[in-house]
Image 1 (cartoon, rainbow over the protein chains, first blue to last red):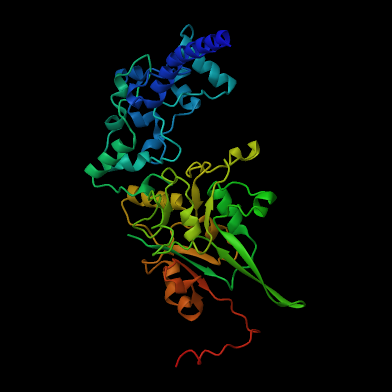
Image 2: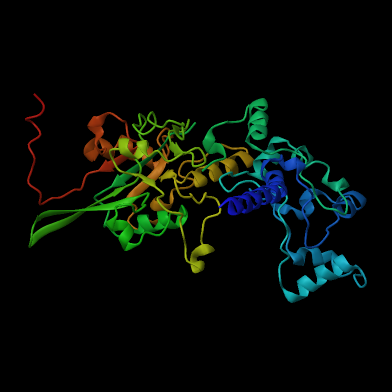
Length: 178
Length: 243
């Protein structure tokens, strides 16, 4: 009995010690502020820097839904190909991925960076119409280069409410939750 | 600020159930199976009540579609311990799903039985996954849900009006049940806008044959019903009440 007790005790201690790093990783993803999350990997490393900064394209040139609807929308591959069919892509791995996806007809599964819960309904159009700039929430995306877009603003409910109160917007629950 | 309301004309209602189906599709209401009905746990934000009038063969079917009454003095609201149900400034009795902790007090206190509890995680067959409405939250297990007067449509219309820099027009949009009704029995709109159909009905037809379900409870429902016009029905004596 004594021997078994020591064995069980050892196993429990081992389990706890092993569980600590696992718990730490889980805690990091669950409890850290969204802005502290590491940059999410994307299937294609799309350089906003090239498009929005070097070429000076407006955000809404590609994210066309932003001014008219709830979703800012990510353009279809056909839209990318309007330009990229005349831009040499051979030997450039990220562009090859784009052309390959276009030719195979498989949409690119982008990873969502600014992830709101399902019970929150944010409408881009009214916020832009009020006079906000994309950068007010999304930061200087144009300067974000290869590793990808990072969330720079908290965008949790406290953040939304503070801004709504400062701008005399409605703070009814049903403005966002329905 | 609008005040949303509804008029349901029972003289027009044929009991087809299109409103029920439309509501289920619009609002991501889970599919009710037979055993769910037997357990009395079916979720129908608007339901069709059927009554039989008379004895066979002189029998008539009577139908009453019952959505949430959106009472202005709602009995469900003060009993919620976490303020998950509240009244919006536009007269809608709202349920905030992410606040709800599922005590079900509100459902006990509702006389119309139009609040529903999610006893299970809602499931849809794969073929129906793509028909879910992205503008409506899918309620998870353990929260109450109820008719919202299709608030996603209200919000959308209000945003559209704001983008175009104008006020909401009368009858610019309607709820799913009213839209699906083949006989136009359900009319939804702004009670405060004199140009809306619902306000005109409240000012005319409701005076003649209007009533509200369980009106004497004093909860001020926002849903008005118009009585069935039955020429064969025995004439009621009205004079005895007015002394």
